Length: 374
Image (cartoon, rainbow, N blue to C red; front, top):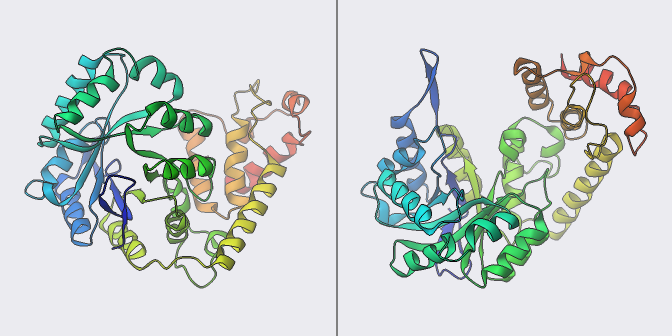
């Protein structure tokens, strides 16, 4: 396993982190049941392979993730760094302390290494966190008391707002958790800023929430002959970014633990030529995707209830990135979950009148249905 200095914390973290939001489960009498024994076995194996960063949250795995993680770390707590999160629902220091106490109890520990303000935006930071005797003030007191070792935040807002939150944090934040992968590089500049400011950077969704785990010759050919799978290419891309410390993978099988640890343990840095080729390929793929649809949503709403941008997004996964299996499975779920697939289009043309790119949307919807409904 490869390790890296985590911001200014003085801690050495494994390049691969174990995300505990997709622990293995099975359906019993119509109800999802999480496999506690296998989950613990997977986490123990990850530790054997050198993983020392484990991330959970109160709501993960139908609220049982923290409990399972706590059991897995029993007797091994001092060998790993534990991350969990505070759902910022109130501008209240008391609420912060209550929810932290609940997490500590479920995790069966007396301290959290990295306690995150969970999925915050700049607006939430201003209105619910950085308030008089609010969560931020209470977090600082509990950090001084040793209950929280490091204050962090996870993020889903606009990239420029991540930079602003770091600025307003005035050096309080030790790390940030955000999305970044081959298909979504929007946070790239903000990640670089976080690294420059001394924050540890952890990446969620390095495999695109599973999308990049699907077979794709297009993705594999970004490094022809050097990667065995799309998932390996996705992890290598994220870990090669010098501003990234941890690629956090939500692992749901022992096979994923073994494969991801092997990538993190044996990864060689990309050459300048390989980086340039990947950047050029991604830019061309982005250009092709934008030719079909930029996702601006001006075509919405559809009179027949179609989610046109989502259908075109899936079509781009198939047509541009070669993620056909993932695209078709996702397309099938649209109708299965009560939505409407492209066959519901009645060719009224309302969408085309609103499209700033003047796309032939009706024609593309027919093509999407033909390609994705096979």
